[in-house]
Length: 439
Image: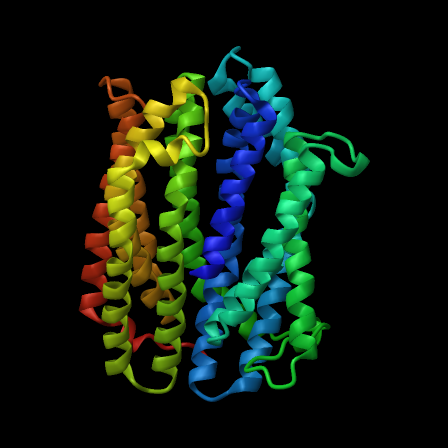
């Protein structure tokens, strides 16, 4: 959770610095709003390895098979690099299609300027994407082994690198060129590289780690392990594709709104990302615990851990829920000074407060299922929530009512509420307790 807090802080700092760079000009913020969903959707590739890596490593650690856990980690990192490389090789078409799609939604209102700024950001992000893919998988491997402190310190290093990079590259300090949005893209691309180097050095120098990762990971290659990794991660990857394809259509409803509403959405989603840190933290703990406890042959304790994980997560969302409901405008004004964006952003933050408990419950229980290797049910539930609820409802509420941007957020709340109900039902059924992973 602390690591995710640093990542959220990085997101907030990026937003504030780009807002300061642009001043009253909405183009820089709008460009970042365009690349935000594109970068997030590209992150779908991480699920090819991260979900399976967590399940495999956690299960092997629970079984007391440390050497096999390390081999599974090596295979996961190699597959992650190859998957990220595929994305980087197709960087040109991805950039052109993605930016062109969202620019078309803008029409002529700053579309060309937004497109240029967004493309310059994506160029750097995609260039170093394979190393970002390796980093995300390495963090998942470490959490699966119960080593969550090391990714935390990696997050500290990454955050510091990003803040320094933003200051230098966005504003052109110390004689460097004033790059603006492009500088933010370069800084965002470099920060995970710095963290990856840090984590590998610490693992290399540590005397007694629970998990060892060889620098020459290809020496641990195993076709059977790679096959099992992809079998587990496959449904999670398909689920992520379902969600992100729906998310792009959902985003299209947002980008069909006036520019101040788009900027307001960026501000509100930045604030609400604080709520995601709780969900992400309890997702990680649920996945690690369910995998290790099932590996040690204790399904009863695995079930109890799932319930406690969800309960403690809900309790920790309560203060955030109250703050977002009581003082939303004060928080919004910390991130933007554009008068036309403050009101809509405030309303969205209040709606986001209602969403947070459903989000936390869904992610915590998804962690339990995926840590056990049971990834098919979350895939189906994601499809139902995204395409059965969020996408059609967001378009209906924005096109057929006067809610505007608020209608998009109402649809999001409904999506997470449905997913929370269905995921809780699936965990209660207990099929995940009998999930077998290949040796």
